[in-house]
Image (cartoon, rainbow, N blue to C red; front, side, top):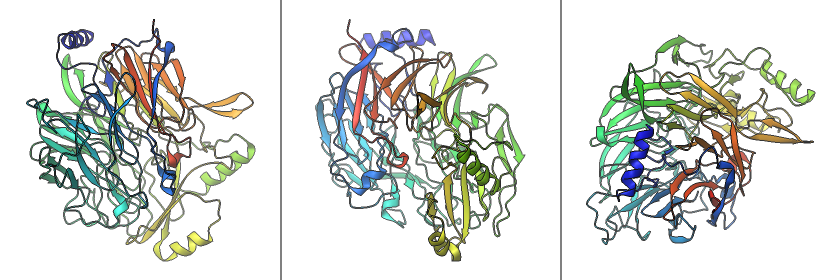
Length: 626
């Protein structure tokens, strides 16, 4: 693979498409989050300095909606422009070497509405091979919005492409039985395959038993005409969701789109959706040109835990019996790592159906078995009898009490009226930040969370009274799950000090040999300072890693540690930690500028729902000039 990287660099020097670009959300359409650049490497990473900083102004004016804002965008670098959206979907194009604004487009999202999510993780670019360089909208930027629009912009100018949809916009609500406007959105970037733009959707799936369809749809990149639609759930299953809110992956040569789906609605009660709920909680391969199902692999049957497939499927090549095999790496909230044949969906690493705890809730028929990979989990997935942990005796006693009062019978303990412990919880394992794959070492690196969650089911007729009568210290999420026989309450298990009830680290990087699933190393993600010069290693994180040919793993992600962390991909050792002006809940990217320098760029704007430092910064790092 080192020879391949040298060849790619040589081709770039001869005038082909620059290898230094970052043309898809994860660098390539298959989601590897890998840069072949090696100007920045193990030996000089500590010399990185801020090259430029750009501020978007996204948090002005100040509104209540800002409390949800999350700057999760990963920019693209194409045609010598750095392009990214803000949480409110304003799109900027910057000069990649100076950070100077080249153009911007504001879709004017209505900030008086309440949206389930306020984020936009990226844009997509369509550059057809026969595009005329001087023709308006010959090359296009596509952005999906939190108010459910798909917008086409001229790559060169940022102006609307009037021939796409109606005046440059497709209303994604068309063809959807909308229940609540602010809960049907697009938060991840579209995927491009050939001349089609493919989108999933983000749904608020705890509010009702029957919500919008999780349909995946493809539109003509020139006209905006709907070309195909695929629904993940059978037509006679009238609950909804199973939507693909995470980024999709594309193998254009095989005409395949890989779709990660979430749970059917509502998350925590399945009495209205009996059976396995296929193809919810799955990775499915669709024929890109037609939308027809080619294969599917379900990671959770009849989900009751909010275990969406949140990570982008990672398309990789692995060595099997001396031959290179095209594969799909699937990372999950449970900490399970599945490796599938890209053409058939058959597991390349053994998977077993194992018995799991049964439900005691009337009308619920939890699946008696769940799929488990036989390779090691990415993180511990069981709590032992002495799991309670605390910084103080008060924390410890509170955590012991909370654990003792709830049901817990291991992974896949079903929800209950008494209250059940989910470990990992719904923010556990690998989330939307996904994984990064290094083709030189064969290592896959992911950021994993270890948090326990308490979930209680509340009979519908008692929901209002119970919420009103409950101790005010319960500040988690309440949802009526309208139309279901049970509402729900959930919260992360925390002690009185706000520290999680299980021992740290709560957030870690883990490196896996992708071909056999064996763990190479683990490293805590940053640290939490607790005063008197003390700290706790490894806090919760949201965001993903970047790996580079220079032997680096680069990540922000930490909820509390306001730094960019750089690790050695072979050992996990920390090489550098660079200060940021706000927390970075985004995945970094890298490119080579016209000046010949390699840049590493990250959006630093925090996450309203994590309660950390918000901001509107895009920060570029490069080596100091010599």
